[in-house]
Length: 153
Image 1 (cartoon, one colour):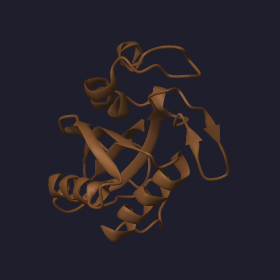
Image 2 (cartoon, helix red, strand yellow; image 1 turned 90 degrees about the vertical axis):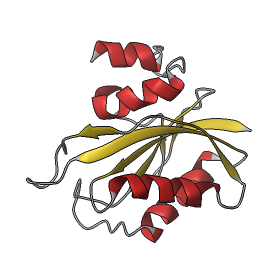
Image 3 (tube, helix red, strand yellow; image 1 turned 180 degrees about the vertical axis):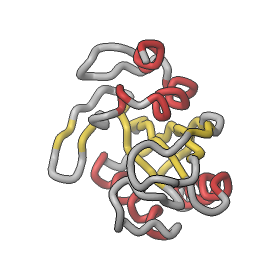
Image 4 (tube, helix red, strand yellow; image 1 turned 90 degrees about the horizontal axis):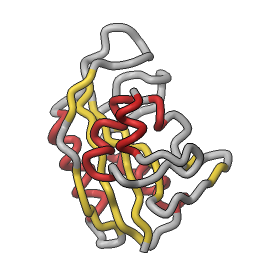
């Protein structure tokens, strides 16, 4: 079983409820176990159209036997089920689920997947909640822990 970190964000509708619903859907069939959830962090929207509502961001640690592509597909299906439509780059969304990192440091780069997430180390809105649930995990390309990356921002 592998542990993965997932970044979670929402800036449309009942944002906290969207987080909860996504967690329920992810764990519904028992193939993914939610091991840890950070607290919710409210942050301003970065990039995308001006005037977007602020985000509630969090990070989760999950355990699963699914491979990274299977887990990514599942995350995208949950986004769709909760109303995400990809029409505007970095536009507002009811839910955003990003596969960030695997605990064992797996590096994977394909047309649809990049592990670790390529901008993970640059985003305070990702690193702050991620440090709460996976602070000792190491970024496999940079060699620093998540807590160290957060402290550097």
